[in-house]
Image 1: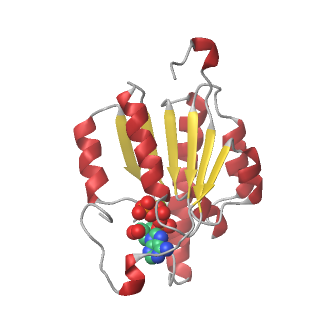
Image 2: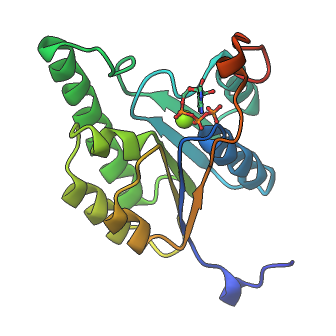
Length: 181
Ligand code: ATP
Ligand code: MG
């Protein structure tokens, strides 16, 4: 569908759920936007949410496709000290996200794993809601991660829940190039 200027509208989109595909769905949309000449910014709240494959692709896509890894490694099993490091990194990511959204630094801004960061108490839900509300009308904002807060889902225009039916890890199949990294 051709978009006419009057038909252009920035959306808030959420990819959540336990099944695989949240970050890849966001990146697929980012590719689509990039192809339309739009500027894409991806901020990662928890390290590990994206892998070498997409980082290498982003490099090749050039200045209109920026990915920044802001977070620390996986949270599960982190001790108190580890959790503090996660919190500091997530807070840093949050400030960066706030600034980018308010300024409309890109046409599509993806906050990867931000839902997870809220769920683990690394960032305040209220601050995330503020970011969504402060979104300039033309900007697409994408929030990924398991356990999306109900209040975030309520503000979004689209919420898709990835549901696990099967995952190769359960059958002992290790991560495969092109699928997982
Ligand atoms: P992807 O990055 O592949 O789109 P995701 O963003 O939906 O996955 P995350 O919750 O960010 O998934 O999980 C990060 C890692 O855990 C990824 O390597 C992903 O493949 C893996 N993973 C996701 N869902 C499952 C699952 N149901 N069982 C086992 N591993 C999973
Ligand atoms: Mg992910």
